[in-house]
Image 1 (cartoon, rainbow, N blue to C red):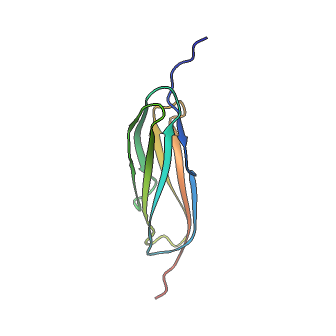
Image 2: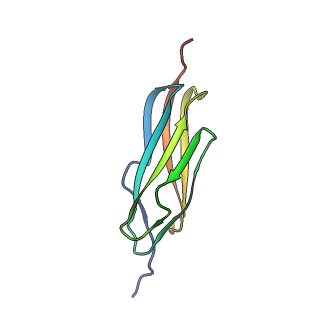
Image 3: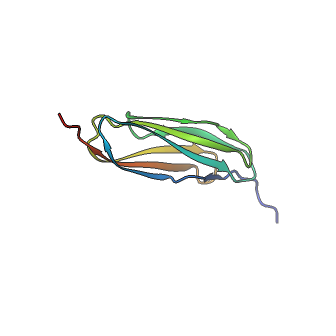
Length: 112
């Protein structure tokens, strides 16, 4: 029996990143590596952040089988005191369709 060719987005780094305690005036940049471990081209349609405090990008939108790429999230923690969970949703042409990358931080208030 023949199997259909499908792309597969496999993360090479953690999808949940816990930054622990950080200062409120901090900007962090997170990079998450992934690869197409399937047997058909992988298309990353979009990567969207969960709030205005985050900017997201992807290094490659079209990956052939075996190709690797990187998702980058830049997060401005200004005004985010306390426990924060910020996500990036990756939209692709895989059977799973969407993937979540989550950044967790306990943002400490700046002393005045």
